Image (cartoon, rainbow, N blue to C red; front, side):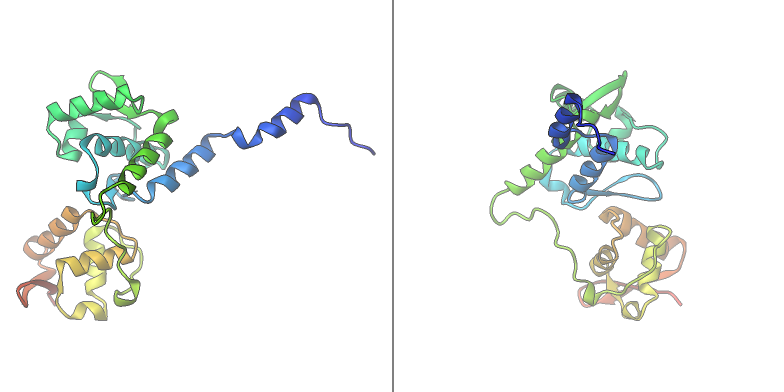
Length: 233
């Protein structure tokens, strides 16, 4: 049987197809743009920067926190897609006055919107543009500036299974033959990154302190002119 020719509406829709999008496509593009900027902690839903904090402004950092919150909500890692001013201050370390001003700037740029008094969320329709602007800003840094830390080479670091959290990840890398020799904090941090365990520097440092002082599972040793860590067996 001969098929009927497409209607005029169908023809127009076919022409416009490259312009059309939906929520799944938008999320896919947001995730792709976010990969060069941050990860989301699978256990807490928190933002984990993979670029130096010094390379982005306070305004951009607050915006990224809101983007990460939205994506964590979509992934079922957060109960809501918004953050209060106090939450943003606590997560960013930016003082309340500055944070409030920068959030007003984000609202003026239509990047953030107010949910209720003192509560904000990312503007879904403008999140892609914001992520693109942050990436472009990083590319425009002065020659010689370090935009982001290079990924550590995997050949020098052990492979581990998926950890349940940062402390478990540290114990896993120190339990390998590579970890039988005292390792510096930086070596451990890079070993975690080589396994795509993107924990913040403060998170790794604090967890090492807990493993040494509270849990007694790791001990500190002298390593040349710095401190090394090894399992306390």
